[in-house]
Image (cartoon, rainbow, N blue to C red; front, side):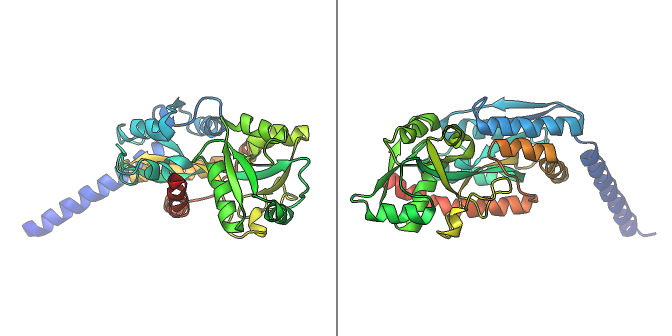
Amino acid sequence: MSLQQTCLRFWCAAAITVSVNCSAQAQDYPTKPVTFITPAAAGNSPDVVTRVVADRLTQLWKQQIVVLNRPGAGGLIAAQAAAGVEKDGYTLYMTQASTFTVLPVTQEGKMPVDLQKAFVPIGMVGEQPIGMAVNKDVPANSVAELIALINKTQGGMLFGATNRGGQSHLTGELFRERAKVNLSFVHAAGAAASLNDVIAGRIPIVFEGLAGLAPGTEGGGIRLLGIAAQKRLPNLPKLPAINETIPGVVSSGWIVLMAPAGAPENIIRKVNEDLRKVVAMPDVIEKLQVLGTYSRDLTPAQTGEFMRSEEQLWWPIVRQINKQ
């Protein structure tokens, strides 16, 4: 046997050994506790969603998942923390929509972390579609009737939302643009304050996640007209999708699990497979729906495509808001 053939056999054997070891590593994963870094504040809806999924993964993996809350700076604090961890797949990043749809525009040229290079997607945890509601005395019982009312109201109408530049505000701006109506945003210090303004009649319209709107709908102070989802929700089939009346008004706050770039690809695939198992479990689906959250069965590549489409949708709208 020639020296060249001997070397070729050696390298082939080494490659097979590495492949087998990596496969075994992924199947055995995790062999120690895993950490999820999240920008969500403890106790808010995305944090509760994260913990529901983390608890089920803990049971599946028989390894504890530790959730580290790093709120602040629009998600930047969590992103910086997650970007600097060891890339072994044992510290993952539970990101939220605004970090990728808002920060790159509002902090353009000043971002200490290149989000596109620092992280790779693992999978979709859940989407929280934004609902549109009106004060109970507003004479509109559908999206079409509300549009007609806005058009005949001199000076247009006001809408409330949680934070300037947040997903609920962006949804209102998207609706204004697609419906071609005269709507003006009124900032409120949080979902509760915004909801109270609508219940009291100071503001006629509000955009907010279903969990945030729940106190008003249950108390009868507001009336849900539509949901900014692709289609009607499985547990609320009578609630129309705004998309049925105004095509393209689709908006949600979303929660995606990511890994620092450089994490082992086989571990990313393993986590994706297990995450998809967990969010498809009936008890998890039920718990998430109570929180106004709906998951999607996406591969890492599909998750990345979804995130890019969201950036393409929202970046121009955020730039327009910044000019106002």
